[in-house]
View 1 (tube, rainbow, N blue to C red):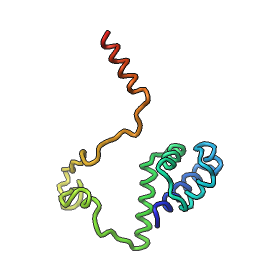
View 2: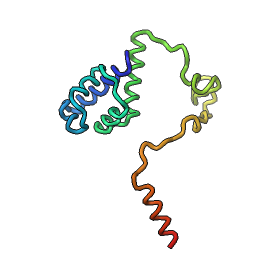
View 3: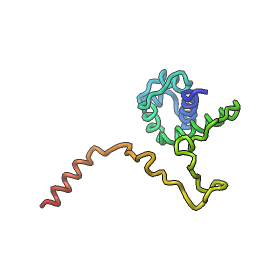
View 4: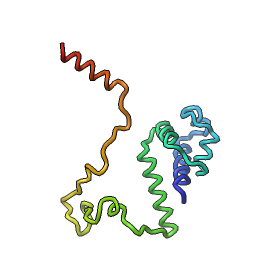
Length: 141
């Protein structure tokens, strides 16, 4: 199963669960019904901008959207007997990676992965620099 097919199914399920039509999404998210239909049927690869637009319109996080896609991909893999030959954590973090609470591990220790992926803000407010200059001017007086 392709990611775009699972993602399309999730997008369709969200829209229908919210009781929305393709036209409702066209009016609110400004995505054409024809394009949304192609996305929902897994016929077209969505751009990251479209995914973000739809997630914002449906008022869900992109992380939650992709988590559901991942869940469905895992279920599909299981149904089709697809097994991973490598453990992702081991590939990313090495053989010494420890999952707290796992059998045979030191359950009171958690691996320090704070520096593996830096935290990047999703959006910087437009007035952030204006506020700083106002504060600097105020402190100077």
